[in-house]
Length: 300
Length: 304
Image (tube, each protein chain N blue to C red):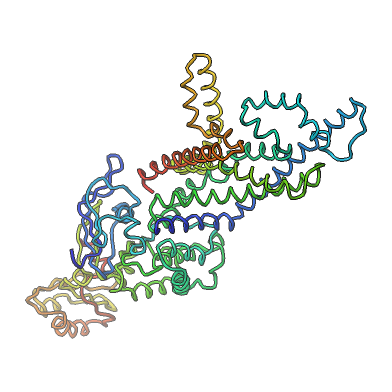
């Protein structure tokens, strides 16, 4: 219990430091504006497409965006197109009944989660190592408690960012899309926020793990961003080689990167969601502990 | 070892081929205020960092409060350090920071709040409790760093250059604060200011090339010598007359300080006996401005 208490104290210190430095505020604002901008741009694009479609079919133009899209979304040919795009029958079955606005936000949240994690957490340990401020903490808590406290603090920060962005995206959808019930979409948006947060658990572990092995905050962030790219390359290379060399077992190695569990989070049912969440948490912890091992073996 | 708060034995810390600590053996008695004196690079800071667990030692052993080497799980709240060149989180407020540190070391919310208030008052920073560390001057930051060491009254405190950057008034306040802790807490101070060590410490260790060259009580180091220093208005004109009064003694005149140092044999008597014999002879030649016996720590260190 003492251990949990000390981890919590480090997490609270981490969050309060972020709030006082306005770093948290800046990230919140950036994420909120990005979500709002993404929703607005997508809705504008939908509006243009709908206008074109109405013009082509010589139908009267709708006053609000979304009417044609909602109909289109339910049409069989369009659903066939989405099915081929998703390339995962189970995921397709789960998302086909959802409102397009939900999916736009989900796409944004999942795409930005790795970036958010690296930008929020990338320099947090490295900066403390460089300034020496870690020393005031590690005479009071163990290095492991300190590492876990930092992780918990960042997990809370990302949760807050995603919650705020979900509200922003919901407001845009309510005001600019037709056929969106005021309160119906909010829980769905939060649901996607929670899924994106689960996805971010692994990326936060990666960002903080990298941050443990260097004393330069900017270098840690840069390496974290490169790691995001490396994970994408890793998956592509594995897919290519598994097909080209007929080594299907290679695809199992994809489980080492967070993107392998992303599709589980798009599912509706509990089991894939749970296993995906556990997979991502274990991955995050593994990355974090590798960084922690490096910290334990070095002078602070 | 009963009565020893902190001991290190044959401590070695290597950086490549260089040995920053080379068999550093030291025992700090409970309740003592020990001063570490040594040249730059002698190993004082490295020793403190090793004791605090910041550095991985190459060999040797450390025993802190009879519970082995430092481990935060065991020693949290019982040990504190003022590390050299370690910045505090710049965005934090002193009050919030000290409170958080107090909570980390296991104090209850009320105790943490009380201890934070006491420490801020002790270092005269109550009025800046809610300013950000970034806005504080170098000296004020040093005082916050000092305050974090004494949160919750830990049993052992290591202070690396604690008076560095403090103005004379605040330095005096900190000296008084540290003197009040004599006997209640075990404190080790590393400082190049030997006057500070002399006024604060009960024990002294001379550190050279990564090891302890000599350690003893301050009293034993500065008072052991049979030596009296007379500060005079002018150089005595007749040294032979002085030698005649105390036949076994030798006299050395330092023109810069106007000090006449008399080193005598134990057989000639104690300091009082020497004064009774010498002072009339000196006053016959010049005015005597001051008399002091023994060695200053600086003299003891430079002569060691």
